[in-house]
View 1: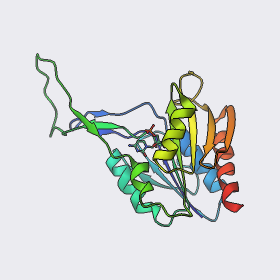
View 2: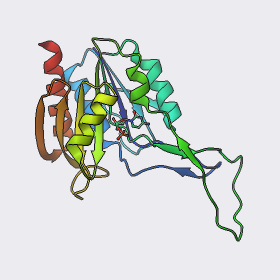
View 3: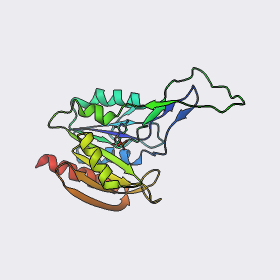
Length: 214
Ligand code: C5P
């Protein structure tokens, strides 16, 4: 069993010292990797991690990355013999269209930063997905949670998506706790109430893995 988990934010460079990023702490992905190792101690768990400040779970191999482009390359390098891919990372959707060499100097004028789309990692990887691989995504939304999550699951050819309402302050980004609705491509729906990310990770993974063993 090989489980690949992505976690944390990505950083998209503006110049040598500045970047665009987001508030992802990486906790959900790190908890999923720890759960993967706990459930499959003899298997391989790989954690492709953006820059975060968390201890590495025991027995987990970490591949550190910075940008969405780096994360795509790392996922591509790990995916061919993986059984499960869980994309818990908060991948930047946009990056600066050009990276300024050195440090941008300030001037009296306003500055316009042109952004371009980053690659959608799950969408790209879904093109080379093998029939027995299980792909899981997260949908962090502040409105129309379930409908948008189902759209993403279809567009990215996922087996499961964890719909994550990030509007309340007590869950999601930077929080120790989370609540998700796990939606399956087969129409299944499991509501997990607010709990620690560690507990939630184990419940999500147990549900996904019970499907494999059936
Ligand atoms: O479309 P949206 O960004 O909301 O989809 C979220 C899911 O897609 C998450 O699982 C996230 O890790 C993944 N994603 C990705 N590549 C991107 C953006 C998001 O794989 N560029």
